[in-house]
Image (cartoon, rainbow, N blue to C red; front, side, top):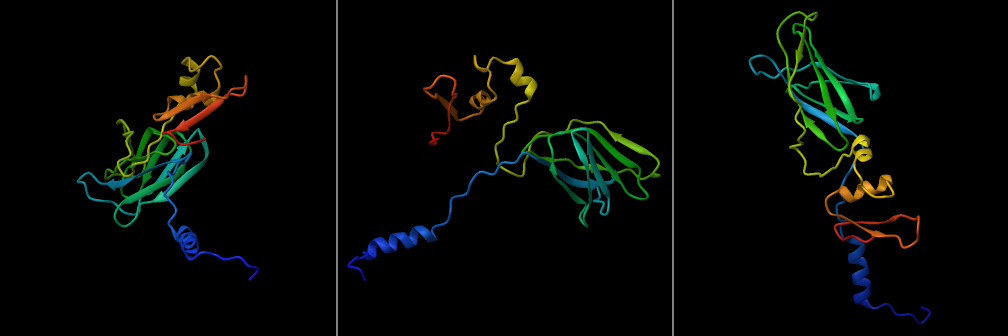
Length: 189
């Protein structure tokens, strides 16, 4: 055994470290989603509705069908402004324009359906809620226009927008032109 001895306490600590659960990491995504229920004029849930999300920001048209409880979910939507359309035989087509999807945001949006011919279109004009009530994930979206208009720093680097996020501090890199370091809630670089 080459004369090496492994102490039992050290071996026990090594085994425990290998078996310890990994801490949960914050999940962030550059995509958003829209979810909700499809309801008729009386508030009853409507299954089997074809729901489509279209946007100038995305070349891909997303389609889903509401399930047996009238629930739908449009996942993996790129940030942008969408038009949500719902269709089902025996109901008027429902269209909601101006739904703003942001990165990491899960919007709750119920779709109303009115009984009528499929050739009729009901445009829903209401404010889209910008609050995700299903998750506690924090996200921050900074538009390019906003970033260009505010004097973030004399250097005007895109990374300087990180200093606008809650809990972020920065330190100079020490070498001219190299930028700096950003720390989130006291974490190391």
